[in-house]
Image 1 (cartoon, rainbow, N blue to C red):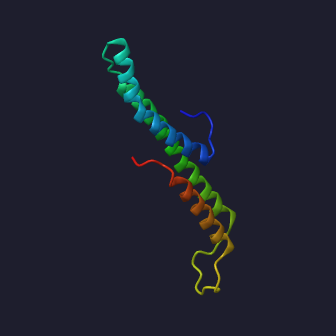
Image 2 (image 1 turned 90 degrees about the vertical axis):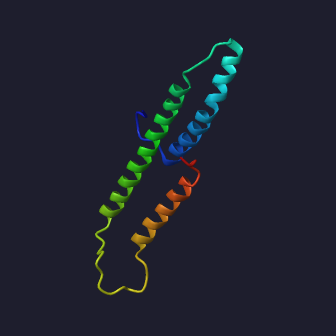
Length: 113
């Protein structure tokens, strides 16, 4: 649906906005039906269009997150099997956890399914 990758915040905003639009669609169709006096049956079409946009945005978030974690892991030749801990956290692991924490904070804005 989207032609090029979008930043995380834009994807989150798309998901939030399309949820509001989908929820409002039924009222819009009801309003149009009352004005025109005809019964509209296309509510499902608009709802599925918004759902499709949300699904695509969610897929992009997952793909981007997976790619970023892979990039993090490729950057550092980190020994995941340390026999003895050094007593302090690796800056590499700390940076990765900080990034993931920020992403999860952004995702808290998402509406429930």
